Length: 399
Image (cartoon, rainbow, N blue to C red; front, side):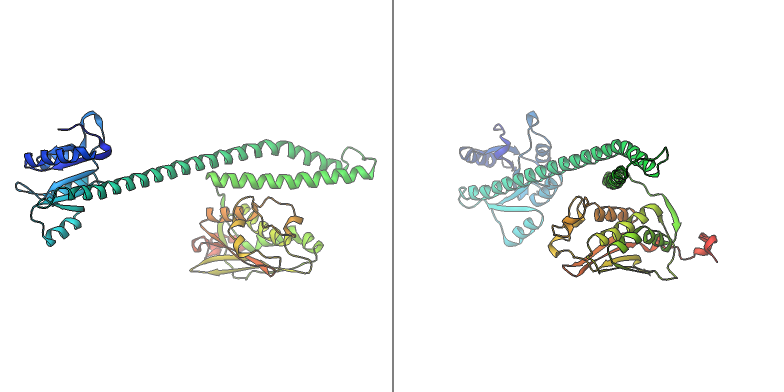
């Protein structure tokens, strides 16, 4: 047996020892090395391991008739051991029926012993071209897997860093907000100068805005890391919308916008995280406020479909989003580059956070927009979250 170089190694399965040796001698000058096996059992053993722990040959030349055994059946057994094995059937009397049967059972090619042995080289060249192709593809898959693992690890590290920094920043910010609020109320005495009051007001407003950004970053980081949990209860979306309307009424009036809320009286309660659901609606309404010019309109509507679920849509007549940017705005820290968007503060976390919260509820988010005409964002809670018999769940609302 010739020493094995597995990069160009061929397993020769042939019960005629003289013919097998002749093939090995023929292949050696062309850079091939051979592993000889005279029985099916020896062939299987050769694929399970070679001396020195080297990989098995990637190509096998298999005689069609091995005593009482079939080369086609053996090829099927060998490919069970090594699915990537490239098999070539050898026979002195190859007919079309046999060739088709061999190809159906996994043979890559065939070789007619009765013709010039030099024709075998062309067959093997094709086989090893395929071996090289498969190895290149496997190397590319491995490189992609490594890159994916590294990207996921980097994303986890980023999320962990953001979560840690958010916690670290919230403590001093809470102190800034708390003390500035005390100064605004003049709890310990008069400030003595109206300019100071304006400064303290700016400090309080800026601190509150920064804290909201940090809370959004923390929530999104937790969602990406899969560490955020729902605190579920049964609640009425109309109550949440009333609260959101009260919180945004001043800004709606200041921006000279009109706002309409259409929540049917028979809208069923839902089971979910009430605080995070309020965060979803507040983010959507706030986004519409940001990007709707003076004189525009914001409409919030809800509908329940037993098949589709409970859907809430926040639509506006704002600047809209170009179609090519619809996917972009769903990514954290991305914003559409427009003259109006640059006039407003923000991190681009609103829609990604809404999407993450809805997916945690088993729901989804839909975004439709026309540049210059407005945007409509729909969040949908799955049907199983609707409480269709609220009397037994919310007895205090039964009346």
